[in-house]
Length: 489
Image (tube, rainbow, N blue to C red):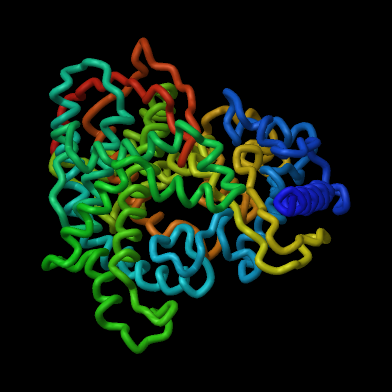
């Protein structure tokens, strides 16, 4: 009998909590779809369309700011660049946490999910690994990896190839060589263990995307993330086995130094401890997966657009040959930045395909006012980048589905809002390795376009799959035609 009364009381509390939460947007005067009592709007999100597709549909129905519910949790979605700038940049101190944040005492938290002092501590350790000096030192390793990719493409002898798979092999080798100082031969071996593990982790996030993307029950999300089959476990165990070995001056060494050299520095202590072995392993895993997945997917979209826009491909190739006229000329950190049209092509691709958009969100850590709206503590602000990046009010007149690198010419860029283009978010929590990723992307394009002409394969079709990123579901199948060697000037 007592059990029944306790159960009834809990149900009443849960009912009151959900009812109160489901009224929050109505009280704030924010439009949005009506929630289901038990699931909020999750049933609307469960289907063939991804979050980014549904957000665009709701954007057209309700405007640039609307609200929906993941279970009882309110999510405010916005494609308003002024609102995004306030949340991600100007009021960052009130919105410093991610959508899902693990408990601060849990050592299995990496920099992506960390919050507050722990995030600042980890970020300060990692940032020097991507300084200008380090980037210059990484250039030879990146070029070496790209050379391996050239050989692999040449061996295909004109046959159509899935370039998403090839770019995954390239980016994995690059991050493993440059950040961890380890040897990886994924470019030459599609069965390379590193590659198999990484593919497994990313594929797991696409099988039940709702559980990975919404995380409205934090404890459920945490269990899932820590038990992504054995692929993640294998990666972690491997890193544990090598982390105490003699290291080069790379990212791993910086993490180990932080554990050893900062015993009395409060910045590097949390709950009375320095960087633990588990924390080191988690940062390594984060950079392995981020460096592998987002860069390879970005390259795939870039080459999809270049193959389908031969005039743009030819224009970019002309710029590349002008900067690297000799056969043995190689791109580097110092010289690749002078390829202006290349920069426009990369930015336009990330405008059209903001592949990391589903994770560009912030949690309000204290009740505050943003552009006249009172945002209660705990509410999540989700950036709707696909709508933002296609908004004619922001970008001017024209077909926003058209691939047009000229949008990023100096005269056009000067007219853009500071947060009009933010494929990886904005503010202090932007990706720490973004500069490395962009460098690798530009160097790869410069080398490949000088050697090959790319066209779509007859069986190529672009369809997207949403998981940790929004990636080509069936890959990007292209033909690579070997060009005649450039004359030495």
